[in-house]
Length: 479
Image 1 (cartoon, rainbow, N blue to C red):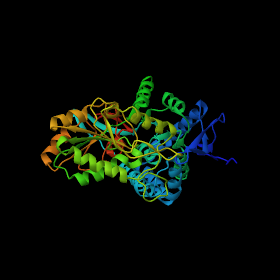
Image 2 (tube, rainbow, N blue to C red):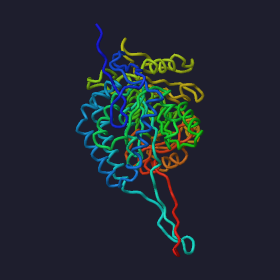
Image 3 (spheres, rainbow, N blue to C red):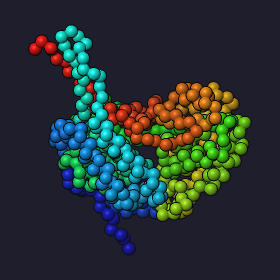
Image 4 (spheres, rainbow, N blue to C red):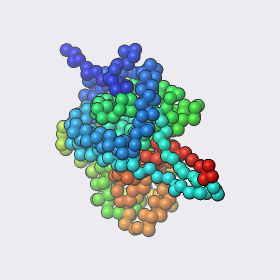
């Protein structure tokens, strides 16, 4: 007996609509592995319509006062709080995340981040006006860049949508946002919420696949393309955007080193690192999945970490004892299984290492030790609940191993020695260095990496600035 699938729709120019050619794609619940909805598989006509709507709305939104934009975003934040349970339900069906953790760890930060950018709208900064040449006064204008094409990932569909639209809209831009084809439901609901507050065309949602995203980036209308995704996707976006010199904002992969020195409180470090490594099934670019531990405490640390993994539970969203749910898709499950299947002979699986259950896309919390710097699982992003462990002999080797990957997004150092922590924070080539913690983020501080982790910042005033352009205005005092 078949069940009718829920129909998700694009949000373009203030109305919900199907793809122009009627094409759809199935959306699968990763807990069951079964489809629960269809979403538009948008083509060029849909992208054209969304870009036209955003372009038409831009002059009015650009010319709105900062106070007006702030007021609108504060209303959006209030509306998200009021409809939090609907968003949680959509996100859980999207992703299979635990209900309780989605309620406590995602909704409050989302609301806080929107309110932060609402305030940032009224804090435009620039050099003071002055006479830098006799008889001439210079001023600096900070302006929105225009229409922004944005592509959000599937690991945090709601929150990453906020990271995209909040600074862009606060700065006076209009947005066309594409959610991942595997997790569009909560973004479509966000469109309904934003659409009830913002002027028509300021925020548009186009569902679709990689080709849809490519059409958005290649479109002549956007002045800026912003993507959170894989390194490969980021490179493709950068190449495509270069053809007409669009601005590009890239938050890509990560392989965060977690450097544990011999003076660390092992029990506390293991507790925090295991949560930071396994949270959201390790599907986080900043996840604490690459541990480098001093050789003198290696055995004790690995034993404790393996026990923590064995005690960590994955399962259904309504189970209150669960730390994380399933992987995003059958494809992602196969990727994680592939990394474990290809482990070299010298590696040891200390805990986990296998799929859990016979339906859905669950994978056990996994710890792998005995690894070397050039092993695939050390060098490449697994994006699953897998923590690797290597040893180091001294500080220099720790730095060399930590920096010896192509990613440079986040890192952490675990030590009671303040001077060592300061040295390490200087030497680690990553956009974020946590000390004796791993993974907390706040709206006021920037998030973004170096090297193949991309460029541009999310969150903070730096993230807001990325969605603005600078104009110099000079006037004669003699006119």
